[in-house]
Length: 310
Image 1 (cartoon, rainbow, N blue to C red):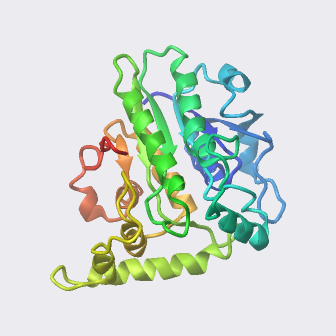
Image 2: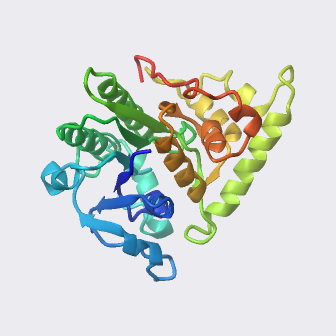
């Protein structure tokens, strides 16, 4: 197996730091780029020992000149940048409420602005991918993009998920181009939690996990809340399923500990047979859960292509 040199875009963030940690544990060479370039710091203010084995760099994903010199020799890239809301939604509860109110106002952040869904969720990934492909390589390289399951509408604006899907489509299109030597990995996690770094995420995850468990127990011939929601036309927009479908997805999609998502990402990078869209069920299989389902997967996940209206 070829030695891995992993570039993590947003390596000091919530998911990115866990990807770095998981990759270091595998003995991989790891490089991180982020806006600050600072090493990950735990919620208690400490710098974990594993951070010393990561090459931390300050760079902007939308400015190739700031990181292009780091790409020669890179065998895989994981793009973890993304925003759930436009604005300063991470600045406490007040900031989150303000960002949520602004998101649904008549004048949301202008599309294409530097802090918009399109710039961060979509354009930054395409920029990194294009820059990677500018560096010649005879070996196949993996490009892992962290997308999302469609579970947040209508609470979160539709542009959040459409910007993710547009990025997926562009990445998969480039991977199919002749001579690209690119394996696209498009991860769609649901709700990610961590009891220590994000304490308030645990109760939400527990509730969602209970809903998913109960939904899976309802016989197919009986109505269940998700099945009823999927009959509603609530919030239908062109090119997307009704928002009621996203609500149904939320009741059926199991949350995952962020460390488990990171392990699934590294596992997929190692397996040449894995490509395309990777949903929560497939992630669970990749890390050794649901072994009865995993036994049927000696090829990529079944949902490996994107519709034309993605």
